Each structure stands twice: as structure tokens, then as C-alpha cells.
Length: 219
Image 1: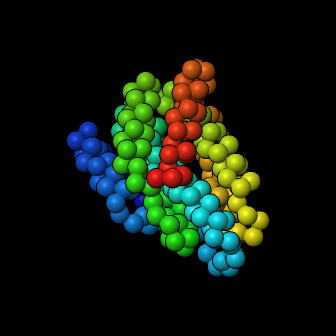
Image 2: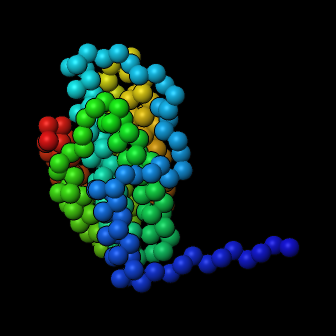
């Protein structure tokens, strides 16, 4: 006998605010737990890197970690203000998958003996505000924001993959899996109604990303 599917719990606006506040604290100050997938680099041997190579790779992974902090904030902001329940659920699902990336980057940072960026609270707040604004603009624009964000992240990951030493399979494997996930997120957002953003908005997003990567590399 088939049982009826349980209804998803409906949260009030205040509930969602409190849930997002808890997620923000966990993202910034907690230790992320991989939600569904094991680290793709688990079991791979640590590469022999010169001190300058290790330092550079660690800084690249710090940038990627902050990028995932921003991704959490963007999706949480969009989910908070999304108009359709389906869009909200899609944003929350993507945030769960991005949490895998956050955990993998933090684990790799620890292995490389480096730290997270001190600027993460600042970037989280700004990204959450942008995500919430995109959600308020309407679901098609919110999904379009996802498409453009993921395209820019894909390009950014390609640049990092070119800089990772060939022998560093652990970092490379993590970034390659992250790239595959970002491409899929962009394709899903586009297929479900995401529209192309105006050129000035795309340019502003690229500028913001450039500022973030350059500052987080050092701080």
C-alpha cells in the first residue's frame, strides 16, 4: 500500500529569518559538515610542494573557501525572498550542495596549514544582501543571477586550475568537482527560467569578484 508523501513544513517569515541567522553563524564560525558527499580528494596522497607553491595553493584555496561562504549567503538570501516555493526549495537545495564545497575547501586549507579569510563576515553580509535583492526582483531575475554567478565562478575555477601545480592532485580534484557542480547549477537555473542579466550588472558582479579574490588572497 502506497503511503501519501508528507507535506513539506511551512515556515513563517520570522522562522526563515531565524533559520538563516543560524546558518550564517554556522557558515562563518562553525565547522561545516559535508552534507551528502565525501571529499573527492579523500584517500589521495599529499603532494610534495615547495614552500612557495604550498603558500600559493593555500591562498588560492582560501579564496575558494570565501567564494563558498559567499555562495551560502547568496542562496540563503535568495531563498529568504523568493516568491515561489519551488524557487525557494531550489535555492535551499543548491545551498546544501555548496556546503560540500565549503567543507572541502576548509579541510584542504587545514591540510595546507593555512587559515580562513578574516574578511569572511564582510563578504557574507554583502552577498546575503545581493541575494535577497535578487529574490525581491523576481524569481526569473533571481535565477538569472544564479546563472551569471555560476558562470563567473566556473571561469574563476579555470584560472585556479591552471595555477595549481600538476602534482597537487588533492587540490585539483576538489576544484574539478566544484567546477562540475557549478556548471550543473547554472544549467538548472537557466532551464527553469533564469534570464540574462543586463550588461552593467554583469560587469559590476565581475568587478566585485575581482576585488574579493585579490583581497582575500592576502587577508
